[in-house]
Amino acid sequence: MLPSRFYGTANCIKPIPGDGSLSNDDSLSDSDDDVPLSRLRNQTRKKPIIILPSDSDTSDDEIVDPRPKNLKQKRAVKEKIIWTEGKMPAYDENNFNFSGSLELPEFAQELESPAEFFQFFFTEDLITFITEQSNLKSTQVNVNKPANITTTEIEQFIGIVIFTSLVHMPSTRMYWSNNIGQHQVNSIMTCNKFEMIKRHLHFNNNEDFKPPGTQSHDKLFKIRPLIEKLRERLLLIPKEEYLAVDEQIIPTKARHQLKQYNPAKPHKWGYKNQVLSGVSGFSYDFDIFAGDQSNIFPSDAPDLGVSSNVVTRLTSTVPRNVNHKIFFDNWFNSIKLQVYLYKNGLLPLGIIRMNRVPNADMPTEKDLKKIGRGNMVEKIAIVDDVKLRLVSWYDNKVDNLLSAFVGSEPTSTKTRYFRKDKQYKDITSPQCVDVYNRHMGGVDLLDSLLGLYRIKIRSRQWYKKIFFHLVDMCAVNAWLLWRRKTDQYISLLDFKLAISEHYCKAGKSISRKRGRPSISNPGTPTLSRGNTPTSSRTGTPTSRNESFTPRKRARKTPAKVQDLPLNSTRLSKTPPPAVSDDENTMNIGNDDTRNVTKKGEKI
Image 1 (cartoon, rainbow, N blue to C red):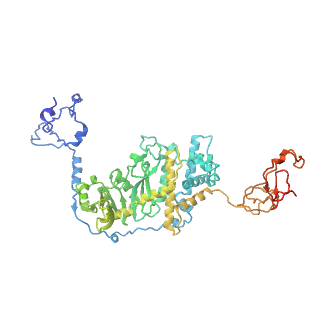
Image 2 (tube, rainbow, N blue to C red; image 1 turned 180 degrees about the horizontal axis):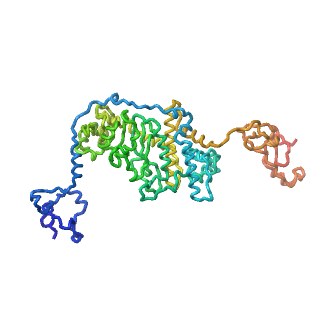
């Protein structure tokens, strides 16, 4: 019989076996006395009393804590955080004025055309590198059949790829179709040439690949050089005052280990890209998620966890002590991250999960809902000489924000619709919510701009989807840099079209020959391109808009009409009359022309 059935679970004493094992597999059974896990999770189980063997050093009344010392120390550190109710002084932007520089470097100020702005990111050295790696890959596939791709063809390939983002078709080969093909594409290169370049497009030497399981294995090996070269160019642009760290999804349906699922994004399935963006949507830095190997952090920063390390890694290039404001959502935010950023000269603000805030004792959503919309609670704590503000505000649901530089004051007023009362009312909003909403949407703006004209060319190689995404991102960054430098307005559509035309014309000569085009036979009208059709009656040139139809040759008949007898039956089957050039006459038949008056009288 089980001791728990006789003595009860509350008074059960479990002595420690001498062999050190805490359970015996022989005593396990499938009887009805086993309690389901669902019931055990819902019940509060009392811990059994552990009685150790008596020793001379320990008395019978002593209770030894089996927990390790490091675990007790970690819990003791969390218990030191004490939150007190109160409000910080009103937030004043003048106290946090931005002292950094937004002036573009000299090489960026010399850019003029849209193609030059795009070439700032996709440099000539990068295109040469892609050409070399693509030719190397073709020889690795078949040494007897090299691709011999040139830099001009890579530029034309990029121009066609950008054009496909503006004019979408169900299939890539339709751009070369005879019926609905695009002249801007099929006049640049053939379809076979385009597919050959796409098949051999490569960015790294396969001979340097390290297999999985080795220490230097890189899941992004196929595209790592391209990522690093683009990041070097992005880091040259001065950063804005307000920066945001967020995730974006590179949409794909491929079966790959790096594909992630995020239901909160417009495209739920794809490769995760973590971006540092400004309020304008410009991407200053990015990091494509690669699983466990992405959990890295700068050498001068502590290990703050997988999510918080993303922020420390992306903000490592942000200038310090110039009042840069950093925003992030609840997946990244933590108390340790706030303390680290503030001590390194950055001002953080973000939504936080309450299970990451110990001992806060904030009111629940049910309690705030009873009070009404617009209610807020603010608490303050000092952690490692950094004063943190925790604000809970109830609108449709509870929003918990943690910041090291802004609190709830000064409050503002927002208008909300109350469904129960069927009317609009004003509610109170804390200052930290207003600041967060104004400056957090940089990455979302970048996603919306990318979604307007996205490259949708399919490929079997997973890394080429990332390449097309990076081309789109560089085009959007070039457009945002154009707007930042010049006051001339140009839409994103026209901007990408100008880039496409520039690359498609690479290596093409558009000079025209002098003089008029020669005509072999001036008397014979021709319909070739560049010649003007002539009139069929007068021989004078006609307009191109006027339709030109050459006269058909008359069909031969076995006998003429005047040679037939008058009582012939063929005269009764006269074809319908056709209007002649003369107003008072009509042509009857195709072979024999007889003049008659309008009244039908024979002349």
